[in-house]
Structure formats: C-alpha cells, structure tokens
Image 1 (cartoon, rainbow, N blue to C red):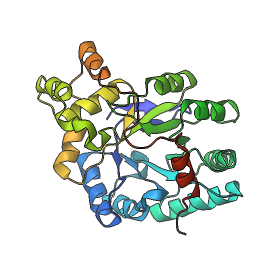
Image 2 (tube, rainbow, N blue to C red):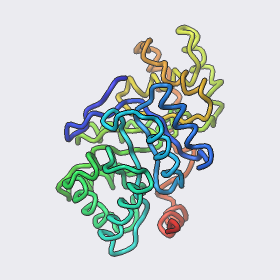
Image 3 (cartoon, rainbow, N blue to C red):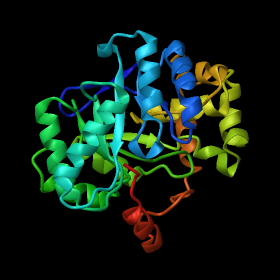
Length: 283
C-alpha cells in the first residue's frame, strides 16, 4: 500500500475504506471483508452511527493496532465546545474500543470552530489523536484556521471526484502542508460516472473499470481516497489500482470532466448551513 506523510510525520495510507451510509447492522461484516481484502485505513464518523460496529470488526480482525489507521469525526458541538469536544472524542474512542485515533477530523466548519479545534489540539498533544484535521472546509475557512491556530490541520476531507475536482482547494492545501482527502470519489454514481465514455475508454487500455480509473486518478494527484462498498469483490477490485499508471494525456482528459460544482450540497448555502449547524447527535 502506498502511503502519504502528513505534516506532523504520521504516515497515512493513500487508499482506505469508508463506511458512510453503511447501516450499522452491515458495517461489521463490511469492515471485516475490507480488512481481509487488505485495507488498513478505516474512515468512520460519530454522525454515521456505526462506530461500534467498526470497533467490533477491528477487535475480531486480530490485526495489530499499529498496522491500522483509524479515522473518525467530531460533529458540531454547542458551547462550551472544548468540554463537549473532549466528551465526544472519549465517546468515539469507547465505541471504537480504541485507546487513540490515528486521525480525528472536525466534520463540519460550523459551531464554535475555534473551541473545537483547541480541544482537538489538546487531544493531539496528549496522544489521543495522532493527527487532527478537518472536513468540508472551503479555502477561506481552511486558511483562517491555519493562520490563527498553533497546529495546522493535517488533512482536509472534501467532496472530490472527476466532476468536482477542487483544483483551487488542492493547490492551497499543498501550499500550507494540508493533505487533501476525497469523500464521494465515485460521485455516488451521479452523472453516469461508472459508464462515462472518457473513464471507460481509458480503462479499456488497462483492463480496468471506470471506478479503478477514478481511484488511480485520485492517487496520482496525491489525494487520499476512501471508496465504500459492501461487496467483497468490489472491495478487492478497488484496491487493485497500483499496477498501472495513467499518462499525462489521460489525466488531462479526466480533467476535462470537471464542472466546478458540487453534486451534493453547497456549504455556502444558508439553508444547508442552518440545517447542519442545528443538527445534534443523540447522546
């Protein structure tokens, strides 16, 4: 497995397994199958409701802890955010059955962002999270956090796929040492991604699927990606992307698919901001 080195020296697999929208009653088996297929980066979140199932699969898998890279995410916290963030982290650790996280991400750029970040910095110093970062931060919010805090986020996990390539975000992250991570790499199949003629045409040259081409494209851009599947055969296919390399021309053809717009939701939309900011997790 190819790794990237985060800004604090922590190594992170460039390809992992995400469990977003996998029901809790299916998550344990999915993670078990993913570990068997060779995945070592697991990505979950408090908001996904399946941390406990991920933890059960980790314990049952018998893989040494230092060979795993486990990420979870903090949901929006009310004041006092520092106290609430610490409790949320401890709850996630308990559900996962872990003593520490490899990466803890602030899931949304809302609430008392600075209070949340100070608590995450403290957790990092204490070794409860080897690295800390953010998700869904647009360049202005990310740069504000970088410039006005002691610890620069190690990762920013954002919607990134062939139809929304985030070139400006990517360049800013590289400038400030923040690792770009993709969520929604397959765009959840929107815009007919799996049958797109550009992606399938490129794949034919390597006997690869459109999905494998997308993963290879992300990896060659240096972007960490976390494809999700509940099918073992698809998990195995998704990890078989290190035996070919796209040419500059092929990368340019994929670049031509960019629409520059989200396919899901806009974090600048006031209605979305209000909905995300008010949502609270039970317990």
